[in-house]
Image (cartoon, rainbow, N blue to C red; front, side, top):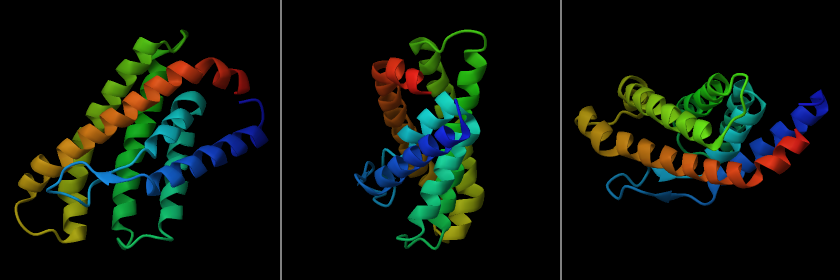
Length: 182
């Protein structure tokens, strides 16, 4: 990043894009769990994390969730869950991309490997986060293992796979122009 003002501007633009994509379009992907909705908000945050710095990706997620509080009906539990799980995915993608590209360019194969590793890390931590934090906070009754195995785990794997695929496709198409600006 060439200057602090450019960093702040790009971070703000990516946070605004992420906020909009967090609200629209959204749709359920597992009919039995209609409150678990697909959104594309992690894609701009992935660009922040991979191209600028993992911390900037986390900041984009934080801003997005803070803005979403203005229209939320989850009592901050949904935003907390989204922040923990999305930030983990996005920040780990940034960290792994830096590790894989150390002294080399970030090729398409390296970025794909990065996304797969970040998906696995996110799925594991999302499962643990839901079991020990989110399910008790939401007061969900019934078998937590069933909720996690039938809803949370497949949802998070599908969502991160779609977000990762979109990120890789956009990255491939736009990276020459983006790198020129950064």
